[in-house]
Structures are given as C-alpha cells and as structure tokens.
Image (cartoon, rainbow, N blue to C red; front, side):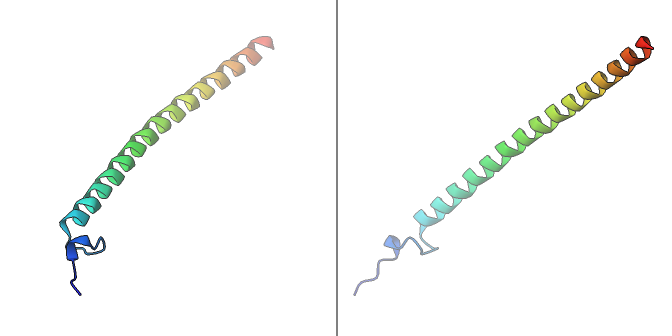
Length: 68
C-alpha cells in the first residue's frame, strides 16, 4: 500500500493545507477587523445619540421653566 502524504488534507506538513490554513486565518482576521471598525462606528453613533438626548432634555427643561 502506497501512502500519499500530499493527498491527505489532515497532514499538517502538506503545503497546500498550510496555505489553506493561512488563508482561513487571514480571512478571519480581516472579518474581525471589519467588525471592529463597525463596532467603532456604532459606538460613535451611540455617543452622538446620547448627546442629542441630553440636548433634548435640556430644551424640554427650558420649555417647562418658560411655561411657569
């Protein structure tokens, strides 16, 4: 029986498998970084909305004071 190491996808010394693993790691890293940048955008948007809510509360308080 002839053993063909190149055909075994679970052979970690297989250059093709190693390339596949590197490609998967690179893809996962890219997706992680993209999600990280999306999270940064969302955090910034949340901060903007919190500031808007704070401003609305201030204006509502001024209106209440003027109505007195």
